[in-house]
Structures are given as structure tokens and as C-alpha cells.
Length: 251
Image 1 (cartoon, rainbow, N blue to C red):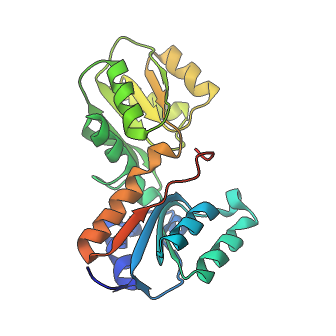
Image 2: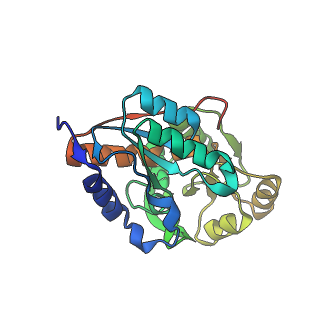
């Protein structure tokens, strides 16, 4: 096991693998906080929460890889407090948002597909310079797929069977409840749309459009990508990593 690696080497590796230069979401793809020049241990988490920062500290990590940065329009006055907490604990922050959504083989969509037996055939949903979703084929019944998804996510899922057809699944992890996304999935031949969060309008449109709808929570559908990234860093540099689950009341 390597004792430490320069942060710039790890950052360069991640930037290249994710092709961050292709994306217009500059502030959400790449290094956000530099708190140390070396990396000896990594923590991976979905969001930049105080809980994740605390758990990263307990794990003696000096790099936290997340999917969700601390966005000013969401965290408001807490953004700088979180960044200060990271610096005080010597933990650098690397965020992979749209670049991770679109990364073939390691995106959240790819991870869900692999875990549920969906064979990816194409990517869809243009998002900040990449394609954020995947579409693939699978066998069995709709209920069997829902059971596989529930097992893979480790949480309850909301499922609506709106057609007897099943076998082509579109996956857009996290917050993708928009009816235009469901429309595009259906136009590409999908009979089932999977995401994290849905609304009344998503349920109504899917029912009337006759496409199956499954929601597995924003958090649970986005644990796959950061794990995959951390595994890549470990394979490349030999740096140990740990996954930091969010507190159970945040999903």
C-alpha cells in the first residue's frame, strides 16, 4: 500500500477519467477545496453534508469525493461553514457531478443497470455537455425488476406498473422527475423509467403515457458512482478508501 500520493496526481487522474473539460458545469466538476497537498486515505459520499465531513474525519481521510458539492443556492449560508470545516480537518473536496452522471461504465446509471441485470445499449438525456441517463434491456417481469432494484438500493422503492410491456429500462439517477425526461425515454423505446425522485406530475404523465415508473430515492440511486470513482483511484494509486453512508433521515 502506498503511503501517500500528491493531490494533484489524483486530481489529474480523476479529471482525465471523467473528461471534466467537456462539461459546462465547471464549479461542480473537479477540486472544490484544497486542504492538503497529499492524499493518504479517501472517503466517498453522495453529498457534502456535515455528517459526511465528520465521518471522513473519523476515517482519517484527507480527500472527500462527492457527487453533490455544497451548492450556494441549496446550502445557502452553510457553504462557507462546510468549506471551513473541511479545511480545519485537512480534508480536500473533489466533486464529480454531471461529469460522473455521463461517465460510461462508472456512472450511477451504469451502476444501477449492472446491479439489476440491465444491459446498457445507449445513453440519453443531454446534461451540461454529456448524457446523464442510460437505456438497456433486461429479462423477467416488472415486479422481479422492482425486487432486484429494491435489493440493490437497500431501501423501499415506489413502483407504478402502467403497462404490461416490460424489458426496456431507462435509468436517470437522482433528481430527474421531469416529464420531458420520461417522454424522451418512451420515444427511445423504453417501457420503464427509473429515477430517484418523482412528483405528482411524473406519476400522472407516466400513467397517461403508459410507461412504468419506479423511484428509489435521490440518495440511494446515487451511491454507485462515487464508489466506482474511489475504486478507480485505489486501483491506480493504491490509496485505501471508505464509503460514508448518509444519515438515515436524509434520502
